Length: 164
Image (cartoon, rainbow, N blue to C red; front, side):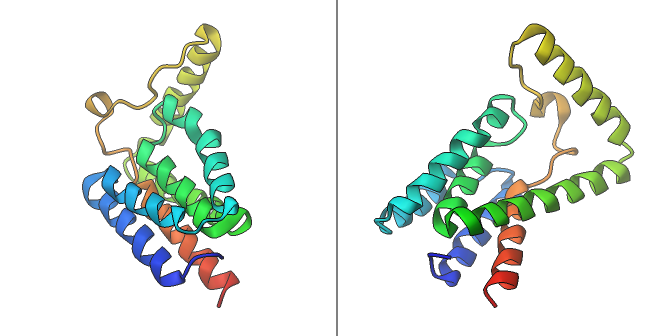
């Protein structure tokens, strides 16, 4: 881990709060993190950041994940480094998957969402055109989770287990 734990907890905790409360992370908050990252002066900050941004950008193009989530994931990888960043993202996605599954089961929407996903993938393969998977006006916010909250929890888990 390359950055002081207090800063990481404060920055990503606030990002999780924004995502929980408003369902979006303000760009000015992302800018705060980017400026802090610039002060590291390390090339090892930018390589994981760029790799995560490129890797997850297709999910944004399909509107399966928000731009703010990708920016926060990229910053997390930059601050934590490739290994701790990857572990934190994996833990965050696992927590997000569990939260999504519980939410869909509770709302009795798992079958319909899996059917919709299957149709979406078939249409994508057949037409080779990227369309929005999720449209808030059509789908509402009942089926979404604040992913940055899960990513923050994943980061905290990794920090606790690996850096006691």
